[in-house]
Image (tube, rainbow over all chains, first blue to last red; front, side, top):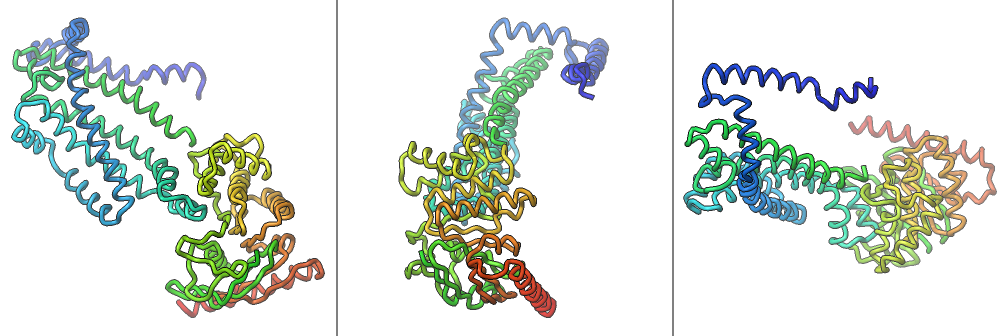
Length: 254
Length: 250
């Protein structure tokens, strides 16, 4: 089953390549039938991709988006950890945090976009705040779940050996929560990228969301596709490079 | 360290312990025997200060055990499960419990290594618990309990999850450790042969709500086989009594 040949076949992901080929053929056919405004051809998109990389536009707009994500998502991460800490230390906080998370989870992205436009106007803060509000409940619910799943028997072991409260927190609670935190970060980051781009349609003059909307306005449909591909690439690269190695690191004892 | 249990009772929804009294001198190896669910583990938890009795008291060298966390007694516990932190190496697991004694890092590591060597884990100090066998994890848990130089060592069916062969190996290990350290040990088990072969004081508990049915000094004066038969008969009687109570109670 796992001969070298079949391993190579797995690595090449032949079934996916077949699907890709079919998509490209259908895409090209649709492009020829309906024209470049509705559906630019694969070749045009490829040329556009080469162009944004060559001119450096890709770094400018991806950089702007990632900068906003870093701030909004980073702040959500910090607050989520504090919420987890509070729910570990204090039972009433656990109940309140659980309910706040539920309410935030049921709130639409669009609510935060509109509200942040009212509060912050056409500034950088609108996408940052939206990203913050949307990713906070996702990460927080993971952290809270992690804190709740700490093995009571290990805490009791800490009690037997008279570890201080801080020592128990540091040696038992944090390590058992970190895998949940990393899982939450992974989902949260994916969401942050998708959400911040939507928020960038309004009010800012850089970022992937802005440039996609701008491309639509100047009827450069192929660039909309180019930037969509850039987004997918960012997601894949960060998932592979950052989160997979992070997961491996925090789970190396398994 | 003289251990004295006076009239200890404990009730949750139902009474579990009902006036348990026993004494053991320093350096004794006490085996707690009894039917499953008779409260052996509960008694052990009371001895270790993890739970307060509903009535009665436990004294060590005539000082009562306190349950507010202020006791200065050192008790090492080996639980049914190893309760090692999976994210720490064996050496770090042992070193962790030495923090409470305020020693510096190098001293903690040296002590941890010494006790791991003592329980036969030399060369495995830097392994994570999930990388070694269940028997080795229990050895590490014993090393952790010994490392704090406990006044009392409590063991709650520590080999229950091991296979027969490992179980025999660990029994003789514990016997050796007891002989070399002279610790007072309270050992919960339901294996009678195990108790007769290692215990100096055998405590047979009755069915729930349990008392001490019989306390036997096992100083080698009695015939082993006769003792095993006698205890087997006692435990069968108590198991049947507990079953009939459970049936009537439900």
